[in-house]
Amino acid sequence: MIRLVGVEKKFADQPVLQGVDLTIPVGKLTTIIGGSGSGKSVLLKHMIGLLQPDRGEIWIDDVEISRLSGTRLNDVRKRFAMLFQGAALFDSLSVFENVAFPLREKLRMKGLEVGRRVEEKLEEVGLAGMGHKFPAELSGGMRKRAGLARALVMEPEIILFDEPTTGLDPLLAKSIHDLIVAMQRRFGFTAVMVSHEIPEIFAISDWVAMLRKGKIVLMATAAEFQRTTDPEIQEFISVGGTVALPGSLVG
Amino acid sequence: MTNVIEQLGAWAVKSVQEMGRMLLFVLSAFAWLARPPFRFHQIMKQLHFIGYRSTFVVVLTAGFTGMVLALQGYYSLRKFGSEGLLGSAVALSMIRELGPVLAALMVTARAGSAMTAEIGIMRITEQIDALDTMAINPRQYLIAPKLVAGVIGVPLLVALFDVVGIYGGSLVGVDLLGVSKGAYWNSVESAVEWKDVYGGILKSISFGLIISWVCCYKGFYTRQSAEGLGSATTEAVVLSSVLILVGDYILTSLLL
Image (cartoon, rainbow over all chains, first blue to last red):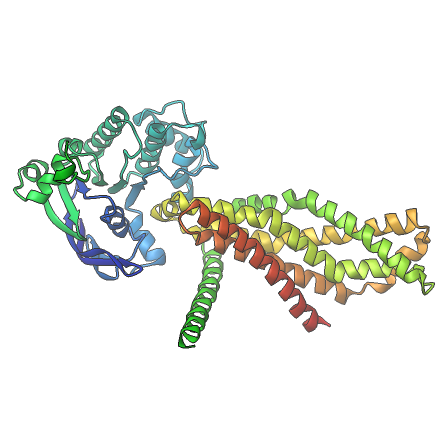
């Protein structure tokens, strides 16, 4: 279980997180929503130790990771995988080599077993036969799929998704969402997703949390979240996360 | 007045912090190098990039440097009737100074800038963060092999530079200007001592470390923009070049 307690973070005196308390349920898909620049990606990066909080604690089961570094932090990270906004594929490696990378570098796996596991994951994400291509030759959706295959190949307990559908058209975004849900249901990993895709995320998430002014203002199941009476949250989810026009400009 | 002092103080604090961060960066990369897994393949790949792929530009620069050195040396020495010492003049200039400095500057321009750009792009596109999330330390995987390759590759390139430069000098001095072949090579042999070669090797190892250290550091801490990457690459080349020249003076004064 991931548990954040009173997490605070500033960048050059600009407060981003101002006391985040959040518990991510095990084996569920939790989505974090919030306005642009509200610190959703920053929050996600704290969970895997890419950023350290100025104050507060981050617990992964019974290990507090906010002050860990080196091999002790790496031991915790072995339980994680992350799909980045731009997929973060290594552009000097082919898709096959990208997916094989953690197997070869972390597990020191060699030979046929690598090929078998990589092909299996590529097939699962709909990229069978694309292993020879390089990231620059792939479309946005295919890059996300390749990134997802790389995240899945180590069979992690927790996968973090940082706006996995940014820059994709609605159909492609839906296919990536469907893929994430299918994989999560199949393998049962704990998924934490940062997304702007409202209302789609209510259909795929088990839990939804909203980050506003540096704090989690509501965390509830997807159905309960939509029934909230908080006017600001209602406004946010009803306009799909975009900034509403002032009344004088409407029409 | 207070403002000026305040700004100077802030600049001094920032500079000391930057130097401290640079030192920690290289120390942690070497510390990670000593831990398994050992990535010989990565080191060989970087040696190929820094060493082998810089060969052409180094040979070209060395050839013309030796040739122009022989040309200048010949007309200066002729005034004193000492053309026979041309070989020693070319060889000592090459081995002691020009070989290490010019080869290092060429490697900075060709491989150092590319190193900064490569690591910088990896930073901007979150590829370095991706390594971290896979529990693979980027300093161990990305930086340490480049440091090792710089320390091994630059001395080899300098050795090549010296040899080609001395042959370039012979081409102009002996074949074009008519200095006796025996006199040229004899003066090379008699003038060059082990101390000169040793000094050249020491310089080239130091310069190799400076190039890979500075260029990797600037790439690793690139600001998240295209402009940031551009200035990181420029800063890497300028700082490496300045440190090579300053380091050359310091090492020369210690070695003499």
